[in-house]
Length: 434
Ligand code: AMP
Ligand code: GLY
Image (cartoon, rainbow, N blue to C red):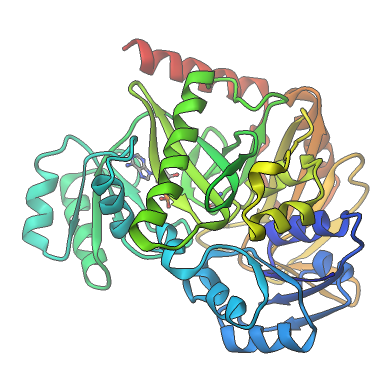
C-alpha cells in the first residue's frame, strides 16, 4: 500500500508513525510545507510544497500511485484537496470541502447547529454590519468574538481574557469586520475538553477525551497558542468529566454527522474533532474541527491498538460499525517545547539540542535540520509524550524528556501535574455548585 501524508507538524509526524506501525507494511510518501525530520525519516520520498497547492499534491499522488492519503491540517481540507484526490480515485482520510465547512466557516456551523437543534449551541449572532453586531453585544453579559474563517486558533477573543472593556470588544468587532464576517457568542464558563472520533459518515469510533492547554504560560495565563500540551487519563474520561457528560458530547457529534448528511447529501469521512466546554448546564460546543487536534493527536494515536490502515479502509468503505477500534487504557501527557517569545515574538533559527529523551516519545513540529542540527522556526518546535498508567507518571516521563532538550525554547511545566488537575477539578465543582 502506498500512503501519502499531507502536512508537516507534530500531528502529521504521529500520523506517519502510526501508519508506519501497520502490519500492512505501507510505503510512506509525504507532502510537507517544510521538511519535518521525523516524517522525512519514515518516507520513501517527499515533496516540499505549499500544502494548499491541490493540483501539485494530486499530481504527486498520481505519479507515486498513492492508495490512500491522510490529510493532517485544515487548510488543504478547506481548499478541497479530498474532492480532487477522490476524483482521481485516490482514497482520502479527511472530509470533502462541503462538510469540512464545520471547521472553516464558523458562521455556517452555528446556523447549521441551530437549524437542526443540535444540543450544546451557545447563544450566538452572525453579523456583517457593525451597528447590528454592537447591539447584539449589548444583550449579552460577556462574549466571545470570532472571525468566521480560519485563523490558526488565534482569532478568538473573549471578555475578561483578551477583551477587558466594552470599548476593546467593539474595537475588535470593527477589526474583524474589515476582513470577515463576525460571529458573536455568549461566553461559556467551564473546563474545556476535546473529543476526537473516526467517522465513515454513519458511525463514529471515539477516542479517549483529552484536555489541551491553549494559553502560552503556566497557570493558564498569557496569549492563546495552537496548544502547549495536553493529557488524557487511563480511562476514556478526564478527572472532571462524568459518564453522563461524555454521553452528551458523543450524541452531539453523532447528531452533527447525521445532519451534515441531511444538509449537504455528503457523508462526513475522516476525523471529527469536537472542542467542548463543560459548563454548569452540561457540555457546550466551542467549535468543531475537521481533523485531529495538534497536540491531541499525539495523545491518542500512540494508544491506538487497531491497525491504522484497517481503520482508514473502514472509513473509506463505510464499514466502521463492523470494526472494533481499540485504544490502550493508558494515561498520556504531551508537552511542547516552543521558541522563546512564542507566540508573539518567537526566536527563529535557534539551535535545539536533544539529548536522551528516555521513555518519552518525541515528535518534531516546526523545526528544520541543517548539517544534523535542529533549529527553531517561528512556531511550536518539538513535542514529547509520556505514557503510563497514571497521569502523574506520564507527566514525569514527559518532563524528564523536556529537561534533556536544550536551547532557546520553553514549555509549560504545569501541564499534567496533579496540582493543575486538582485546580481544574475544584474549578469545575465550584461552577456546578454556584
Ligand atoms: P477556537 O479558536 O474556536 O478554538 O477558540 C479559542 C479559544 O477561545 C477556546 O479554546 C476557548 O478557550 C475560547 N472560546 C471560544 N469560544 C468561546 C465561548 N463561546 N465562550 C468562552 N470561551 C470561548
Ligand atoms: N489543539 C487545538 C487544535 O488542534 O485545534
